[in-house]
Length: 207
Image 1: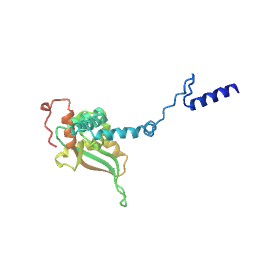
Image 2: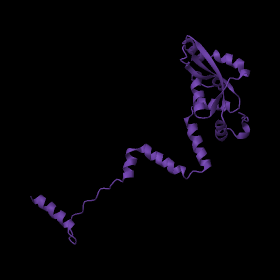
Image 3: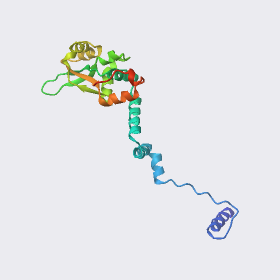
Image 4: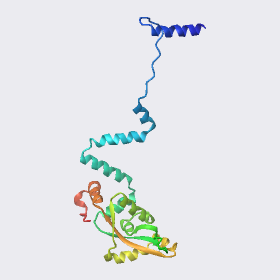
């Protein structure tokens, strides 16, 4: 009862104007604003809000630098080697290994974008070249084109590639769809901005 009376007396004293008490007032707890709570529970929303705010202030040069930086950070070393070779402006053969089906069911692609560009660039994982080419195209750094009949010898070499041969052996009716790959306009501008060599040391790219 004594404790209850003491607490009640203190609470009443704090409510009556002009009445002082020697006991410190309890400190109020900070109140989370709606935005703060949202930021704590949804960090991705916060990051998106930050990007939108930054976009209102970025100039063209800084926006381009940020884009190049994001793309370059996404590349693996072998892909950088392929991009360096493509920057010379030449086309390289590609082939898709597909299985023909009956009754108009469409072809099933087993290997997409196999190419001689990987060996020419000296990549470490030659069996991953189809993945490298596909990723470079997805990043907008390279572009695919139709078959180039002047590359007939390279197409023959490509059909004998271990990755292509292994895929073809798994199919009853393998078919090879020829194409080409070359650097894109975006890939050219990125390489010119990010090449570790000075511009005068680079072979001019003419995609």
